[in-house]
Amino acid sequence: MKDGRQIDNRSSIFHPRWIGAAVPPILVFLLMVGLWQWTVEFWKLKPIVLPSPAAVWKAATEKESVLAKGMLATGAAAGLGLVSSVVIGSILAILFSQFRWLRLSIYPYVIFLQTVPIVAIAPLLIIWSGNNLRTIVIIATIISVFPIIANVTAGLLAIDRNWIDLFRMHQASRWQTLAKLRIPAAIPHLLVGMRISSGLAVIGAIIGEFFVGNATSYDGLGSLMTQWQSQQRTAHLFAALVASTLLGIAFFLIVHLLGRTVFRRWTTAVDLESYEP
Picture 1 (cartoon, rainbow, N blue to C red):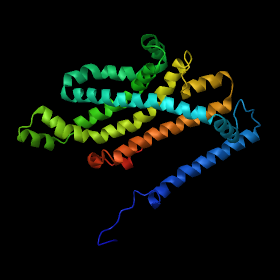
Picture 2: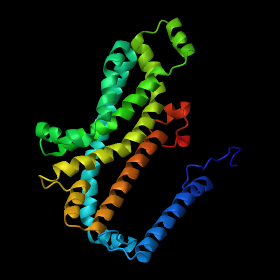
Picture 3: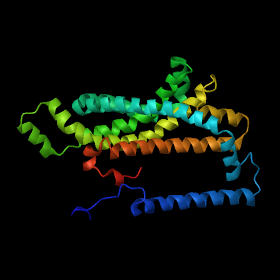
Picture 4: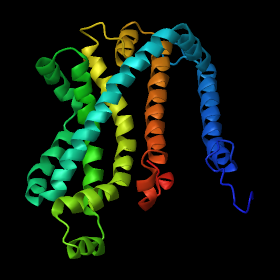
């Protein structure tokens, strides 16, 4: 208590709330690493089958600059894909919320596009778009756009009928209702979709690099994985896998930070901290 006001320091990383939340994942991580090391030693597995954590760490330090460069390349493609999915998905969701006939006509095809294996259409995208960054961004966008469309559409339509009646009573137009009521109410749902899509965008970028990297000098994490797999460098493959995981976590934290800062005023309707993906 200071000057009659209570100081809320829950945002500090040293607050017991955050420390308590961080301890269980850390303990699980240490347990998994210990079990991994024990499995390698007990079964005397060859490094080509399953390298030890120490071997993976050594491979990561040897290729530190290469992995960092790969994370930047993959992160750029995933970031562009995530931004594209947010823009495209939000526009489609707004159209779906305003025109029921459009939603009934097109939404089934959006679901169909989501169910088509991306590895089946990736070769076609390369033929149409070429072996370049653009193709990787397109693949990342296709994989990550559906959660945006689904969540934003739900947010735009899930408006309390009393609020709708209030806007009608004041003779608000459809677009005024959209701009002043539906879109602000849908922002928390957008953030939930972005949390899901942030990881999918990284996955899509890596899948795109599996195909594009085979024909170019592209140096993303997916290309590195393909290269090291052909050379049977399993420890380096694990190092690239860990790097891709860290990249996905970074994207998730960036979206969470946006929800806590830029979009904080609109997130009171949904408790984002209680959301568990």
